[in-house]
Amino acid sequence: MANIVILGCGAFGTALSVMCQHSGHQVTVWSRSPVKLDEKDGRRYHKKLPETAVPEDISFTTDLSCVAGCDLLILAVPSFAVRESCQRIRDRIDRKTLVVCVAKGLEKDSFKDFVTIVEEELPDNDCVALSGPSFATEIAKGIPTTVVVASRKREAANQVQDMLMNHSFRIYVSDDVIGVELGGALKNIIAVCSGICDGLLDHAANAKAALITRGITEIARLGVAMGGRQETFAGLSGIGDLILTCSSSQSRNYRFGQLLSQGVPVQQALDSIGMVVEGYYCTDIAYQLAQKMKVDMPILTQAYQVLYQGKEPRQAVMDLMSRPKRHESEKIWLEMK
Image (cartoon, rainbow, N blue to C red; front, side, top):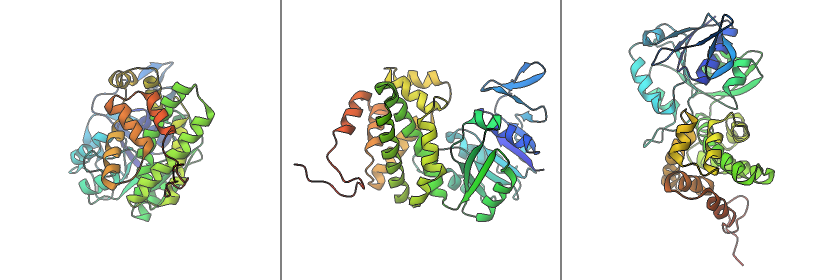
């Protein structure tokens, strides 16, 4: 049995707490504000996971001293809070504690992935990224889920695999931190586009297949330019997570895109979701990064213009479809005739 602390009590953090408790671990969940769980028939329920009871053995606290002495710390805070959270626990966390970051995104301005940020702020602790197709509701229910953990230290990834893998939560390991991190971050952008596409085109199957296929091509192009490996983007944190988030209304990024397709203004759509829409923020960061790296990303460019420059979504689709002819590898321009 391991002593596990989870920072962040959103749907994903709470789902992981349920999964870890069912695996026999001692679990504490930290949040900035006191957590109010609903009581029904003598059982506790989280408002964002209304179909899954939260075991009584799981403790909830607002006291950051809970991280002292834990074996595993899971960072399940929003992307913008990763660095700050690490800074707040720096003097409380033990050197032996493994840190697992499940936040998906890139830091604004620095373009750094979250493993790098954790390593900067907690240099004495090994850090592992966890990513892959994993909706919180299904993890909490014990529905078979498969993810990947990546670390620059293989032994750290192996330890997380040994600690968290169970009959319903299968874990693979990787040493391609950049590939895993970028796949998990950039898929949220394509998921927003998928929601727009389905809303505009009434769930057209041809368009969805094209978006997912060309979307992973763009993600891999930027990922490889940043030092990731091509094959990683064909794995769980790449095409696996992309298929999931582009295909279900369980994804807040997808739902956000659907609202935009209905003509809902960007800020109003963000407010309507009621949770952090990582794809919105990552679109701006990834667009600036692609410009800096001189990587051609037409879908990302259209997403940026819709989200930040007021472009009509339908015009964005038309502009993508009328681009100059290309070779499928995107390395060869075909001569216009």
